[in-house]
Length: 478
Length: 153
Image (cartoon, rainbow over all chains, first blue to last red; front, top):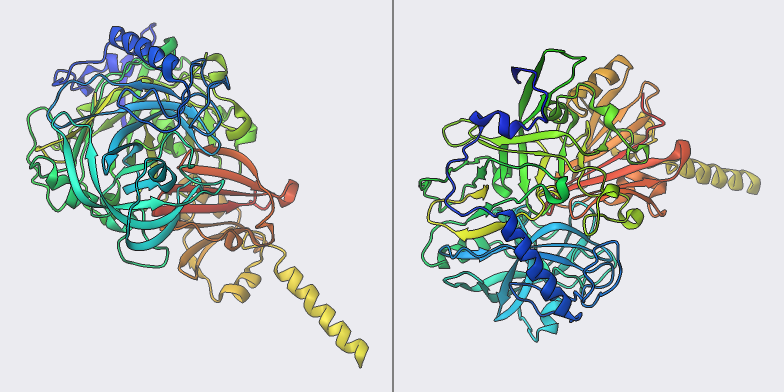
């Protein structure tokens, strides 16, 4: 554990601002996503949404479709549903293309559907046999999963080329189907195309489907790397599943680049005055058989070696926070931190950590006292933490230094927020913007950790770019 | 003779009902052995977080593991030899809920909370009978845990 003492300051503490040595803020190869830009984009989105009219499935990079209607009143309102299968009107914010080589623009959707909830969830538009589909940009999954209903609605019939499969996500929502082959394109500036890419065609139309047939997102663009964790993996087989050749087959087609992806996030925080004053940068990478470990200036590479970590982007993260408690020490405040293995998970909207990590990240000695709602607690002490906590997360760079850090303040109870950042409890019994923690089975001893560093609500208006990169595989948050 | 036969059948039915009264959570150690064969004792530190393990150790709890189909199952018993927590870790699929919930499987659960695509907590039963089932993970790397708060040491 790392402990650093500071003299007490009577200003609002922002670890990222106070402890500049943890930041690598000078390297900003991409323009930042400023407030004015955010406002401008928001107005553009409003304009698109107002003209959308509730269609059923067309997709574009400025996505005003997927069924969003003219009502932009947010999740608390119910008007304007179309193709998104009920629930609420999807709110979409897209980043500003910056014309990077092989840049794939990423949008973010906030919506509640019959069986899914999207909170500032990143997605990209992927063209399959020439037709566009909105797919979740998901570092917590492997392979490409596309809803058959969406394919059919676009007039695409794929021929089965592999076996059948079925599986589920961590919330027990399900998928099943068969393996097919298709051409996959992305909306990169230079155009990225791969032929004969195995795709897991999801035929699950059950109520508990992971991607309901009428949903805003029509599948999952999994960026994990393990063939044995991919969509299409048979329950009983040790053989690789569908979509597993996405990484080795798609990537080499990407204009000659040999490695996967780089994503850049440019958070525009302080949304509604609640979200974090974010700063700093997080970069991580994955091993692949094709990696060259060449790291361009301005990018860092975080190799992972174990088989499980190759499956998903696990990272050695430092969770830190500030103790600013006069009862603890009237004259000083402290910076606490500890390392935990974490999954950086763009498919998750929450940050999940065990109570040890939480205590270190917040500096609160008995974090269990922050269990705000007894209805959400149970035997293992899992709880949902309300907002207002100083948090920071840092990652090693390849030199073993923590010069990568992002800091933020957790969002408050969203009952205090205005649309579209408020969510009804009726379906989910959980509200957005919280951190989950608990002394759980999920982080035991020498087992690899299950801290899940999601792309959470408090990264409102996050801007992200996916970019095929010659520099090695990496993801960048800035 | 017929009465004896009926009594025997009734006895078997009652025994079967008692045997299936709970899934793993709520079963005694002996019932678990009867169902799954020998259980391998494991250190509490492998089946509980450090703080919990220390608390359980002080209260006479013990940890075990056993195989059920393709799942390796971990179980913790209280000082009365009753299982209060059972879980599976990092499997490609989630286990059938009967493995962890027994007779409560199939009953309508109450959703306590849900993280879309990543985790869910469901309460089966109520009161002292309540068992919380929680699942967590990513496709192909899934964990599940059932826990009875009433039986915790």
